[in-house]
Image (cartoon, rainbow, N blue to C red; front, side, top):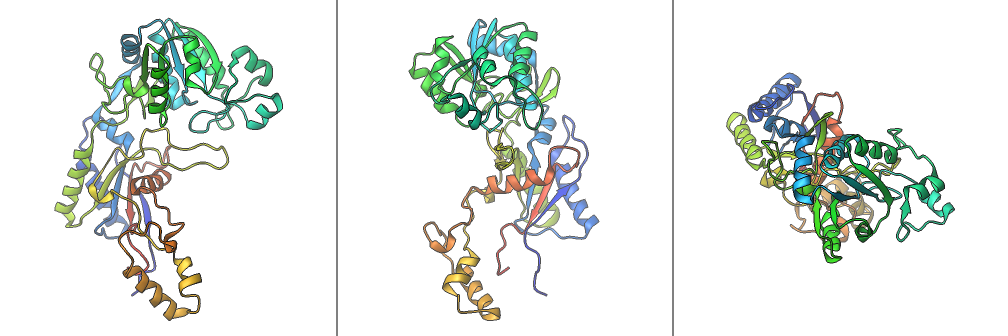
Length: 396
């Protein structure tokens, strides 16, 4: 019988993961048991994806705010530190800010506006227009910000992040000064020791600050990029990708896990005879049209994946073929013509009009976004995702 189902994404339930758990065994066993329970079969090129959270938990990759403080003080001097371009997040940055402030006497907090890097808004462009403010050139003090805009609470969390971050810094024992600006060099009018907290633009920000004469420039990726007093760490990303664990502890982004995905792939082959692709995923890379938030607070979507997930899709646009090349055909003739085009397509369709609009993005970004939306971030209890049929086409 002809196949009637294409791509399927399933959330796989598994035990609560603790430090030291064998993720290879848990992942393979959980997927196989789910297949047996639900009556589906595993196939070659299925994708099994593990959320970064359970990988870091199994690794025991945690650190305390005191560890952050010690590293910040050691690398940035412990006096007046400029902390610039953080995202507005209780889960992602607030706990980091606590540790950072514990390692300084004074924090000059420079917030980008009207929103942070991933789209969390302090203000709207309409507010800026009405006040005659140019966000590309104007620098606002806290007093001027309050005079012009008053209190602004986040649409989803209900938090006034300006007041919230200020209170965190004070409670950590540091003095605080808040300014609003979008040019990195502005911070050098206040201090020459700078911790830039942006994620995807960090390399450019560091370059600009160093060229402008900053004495010390670090990014979040430079903090806890090595263990401090026995803490967890991430050699590649430091504090980037971390999440709040407790009021005084963070879970870091998982450390090197290429060996993990390869071991899981080998175990699937051993137990099922199927060649399964495996990846670790964090935030998806989608953007919320309501809140305008780009859902990518992690430094990458996938920190590790098997080789079969390298690259981008190579697809034809079926409706283009139907409306152009084969507009005079219908029914079985149309199906056969399109099927033949798919079978005969070139190995690289870049520049081919028949491939326009086919999402030529990295496979791991596409599949990671699908997995993140499937697993959610709450109480579904499905931190492992099985994606089937992703690499199939109309002819399969």
